[in-house]
Amino acid sequence: MDFFEHQEVARRTSRRLIVLFALAVLCVVVAVNVVGAGVYFTAFLPAGLPWGAAALPNGFFLTNTLVVLGLIAGGTAVEMSALASGGEAVARMVGARPVDPSTRDLLDRRLLNVVEEMAIASGVAVPRVFVMDDQNSINAFAAGHSINDAVIAVTRGTLTRLTRDELQGVIGHEFSHVLNGDMRLNMRLIGVLFGLTMVAMAGRFLLEVAGRGRSGSNRGGGIAVVALAGVTLWVLGHI
Image (tube, rainbow, N blue to C red; front, side, top):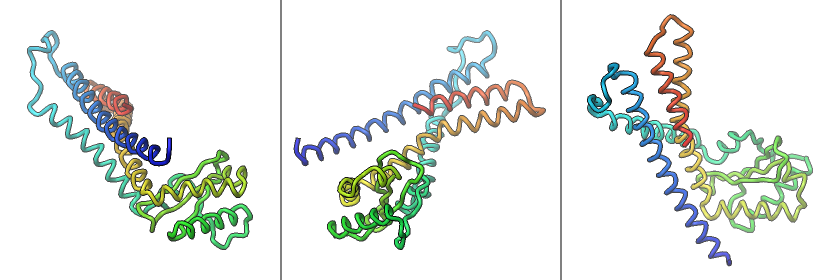
């Protein structure tokens, strides 16, 4: 398989990921609606009355769907806003430290030299460099919305366990992500994945509300319904 065939495989994989994301959202929406209907009938249907004899409130499924989609879209928007500053926001998110351009640390100096060499060879501005000191594995990433706000981060293990030539290979690989626009896709994926977790986070919030209600003076069926809804959202949010 040559370079262009690898590129086409990567494009197909990206398209498949988009389809799977859409299916995940659809599954969450359908599951919340189905379980929501069951919770409604269980909590509010008079004893002895069959489910078929009762009707759901008008707009029940539409409301559930809009709430779920709103949670996902809202979470995505919030995370994308937090990442608006570019790659540095991602580096800070993973606890990476910026490498001082005037550093005298031999490993950091070697890393900066390699990044500068690759930037000159690629004809782009030198990106900011970060190191994840608490990671001893060999790994690296490039992040940012564009070449102008790109950063390259490497783990401590990358610095200590690779030769200079091997480090050049890793940094060259990351520069390919910078030049091919892969970083933009990664930034969007971070936002979208955070949005998907909002359903589970909403369930956890309801569970906390129910827990506070049980410990206070408000007790009864209402708290049980809130707790049940919380467990449901928390479980379904992990789809």
